[in-house]
Length: 462
RNA sequence: UCCCGGGUAGCUCAGCCGGCAGAGCAGGUGGCUGUUAACCACCCUGUCGGGGGUUCGAAUCCCUCCCCGGGAGCCA
Image (cartoon, rainbow, N blue to C red):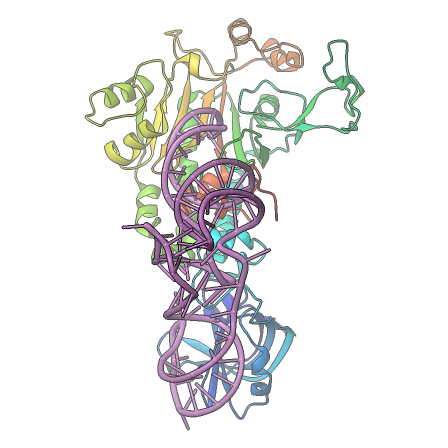
């Protein structure tokens, strides 16, 4: 008999049907004449209830069906006479693939703290919580492709290893094949990377944006969706050293088009989660109360608040809130300022635009006022910046001037300037940190809980 | 990197102005005719994060290192 997945049994099973099901034991409850097993196979939030009468031959194998054991059960699907579940399987036979010693198996029937589960990263996906998170993550990943593909965006694969070190997006990991025990040195005692594998100092990418730009300037609308690496010694619940980033880039587009895309994108993802991940969100809502179906509905429907950086500063200045950091035009918004805007003033996502050029990257397009750039950040409650984007500077003279001012070395960047020399055009894009999105949607308070194997300073165990 | 708070049984935590190492849960055994984080009874469980110091005596006080969490900076 072919095995069925629990999700399918619960949604389209017929009573009286013979079924075979494989999964891991969550709990076992026994009394004299009857025993129950809650079985999970990862396909859905819900467990399948197995009923094992004492007279069934399967009951002889019950003592090996401890929490965590992998088993196959065959039997008849029945309507459950008791509260709590619609269906159950009356089991005639159980096969044990692998038992789990109840003395040493770390997962108990009871709840565990997220901190403890982080120490057993290889087993935590077996919990309700992490099952829900990783299913939500999958739905979102699929929805990202669905959104862009349905709009004719081309998925491009920008490099993981790069020689560009000038994106100003954080510290870089070096990629090298040099013998670290005897590094070749130049005249000044610095490391001679011409002898390294690529003949240049190479890094793990911090962003695919610059490469996405040249692909947009030929294919029109493109997006990247891949891993990104940041080496800064950052220790917060919102930071990972290895994370996945989504970066659409559009030719013949300005900041308005960019914001519209970002907003529609964000709302599409919320809609998809409600459509496909409602039971997982409902579970997380019940246990952690940091996310809710109602909230996601609002997000999916309500337009975002738009506010310029200058207006945001005014809003903060007139606030009676005591801020730790100064509020002044020209200074970057601190976490506390962002949180005040999203949590207190607007109670939802806010798009802040037109930041002073001094606090933003060199490639962002200079506005006619010549003191701000066509940048936009989408801030969300609790997490802060989830999307950062801009219209890119397409004018060669303005761009080179800004590079000189920001002391960006022109070496390695000529190809980027070529895009402004030959067939330059307005273009725009943004970057979305995928884990921050998953974090926001699931309501998980620590970003390390929304990726199977979190990478962070001093953290690489699994 | 900085500022706080923690580290005691498998898990969650109490004990901390020095004087016998504790509870709940988990686990084991037995009981129970339909359970839902089942229930009832009994039993088992320790490098009190590591190292050093003070003291007759340290889980408790002091120093130091490590690890974890929260916040900040940095960043998406």
